[in-house]
Image 1 (tube, rainbow, N blue to C red):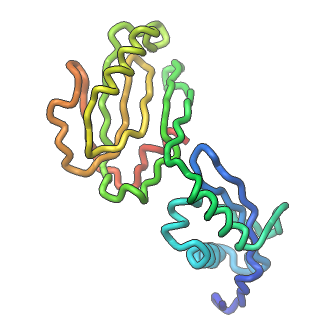
Image 2 (image 1 turned 90 degrees about the vertical axis):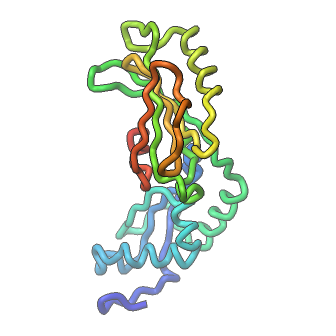
Length: 215
């Protein structure tokens, strides 16, 4: 392969990788001796090689972060090892890995979230909207969180919500509210799905950008 006058032998491309078990994807460090000469064009070589090795859908489904390295990283291996790792992950993936996350809002109060980090956008191409159901807490404490009894009631309420055309992504709690997150087809009928006092919002988000809040 020749790119802008620089010869690139894809057989010399090496990868070091780690399995992100929570997201069921593979994070890569990619190296080729020609990267220093190619500069930004090295990305072209990288994506061409990955698409050839595991397919463009395989890249979207199984590859997480990609870092380019001019120097050969530790434990770098030929692409064949990545192909094997992707094959194993494709067999063992559950597509459902709920992680408990904790953060702070702008007010300094805690926020808790339980999110399915292994959900794959490529597997739900019609779900291009982000649907939220915001439920005010009846009796939040000073930190804006529910009591154990109210948390249990909210969990039961969540289980009772029927949205057959939507995919549940997770929930977050804090600042006096419980917010349920779904991805759904645009134009989904949300009539009557929300409990009394709750607010339903549907916004266009084909790239699922809302998930960045949970990184």
